[in-house]
Image 1: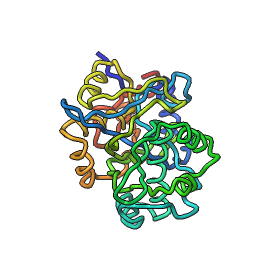
Image 2 (image 1 turned 180 degrees about the vertical axis):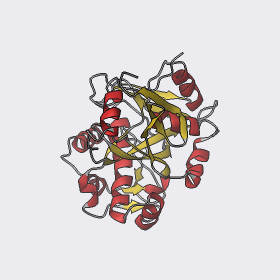
Image 3 (image 1 turned 30 degrees about the horizontal axis):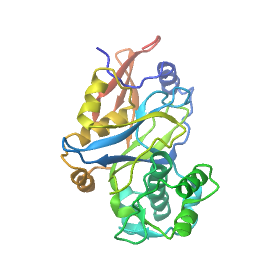
Length: 288
């Protein structure tokens, strides 16, 4: 029985083109995504969205809230609480400007796509409700890029709570994909009083799912997911509380995972180092 691994039909030809030198890899765009968790009597659940079938990338796949870095997040200091930018730079393996932009992208995209804001009036507080019309107007302005995240925080008198995030993983889109992202995955717990909603124009459905149940549905072919999504779900499954997962993030290896293609015994082998379940064997002259 086939699992739910997202595997576009054009990949074999693109892998062969990359291996033969006919395809030049596109540079990956920096991005961030958040595994948003809530506690239940049965254990933690993660907020997931299903991408619309009309999307040019990963159509129909289940994913987490996230997206690309806004260049304006590099341009000025953002109202900030939690570990300093230098600490985040060391953790992520990037410079301080990129660290700020990546953390900002994680918080901003979670607000844009799920309506959840990891920010508060001070370093020990968090917004309790973001459902009013005025909040929705600001969210739309962020989505439309009429408002930068720094401007949004200033307007609201809020500080970004970087301490509510834990860096979980880093995956880079394979070199044969035309749309590529260098994505940091973060974990965070749903703040008390806040509620998620399907605020994303890129999704047609959202669900709270237990990581183990979602992984089982993937294994049965019921849910389609990209390799980093199912890999991070499996890593979440052993944790019995959202706070445990966030605390465990500090020990995670953030070495980037990048798919590799190699010629072996007359066929191309596509693999993700450290994640053997995703390996694909592609005939060197035909379809996979």
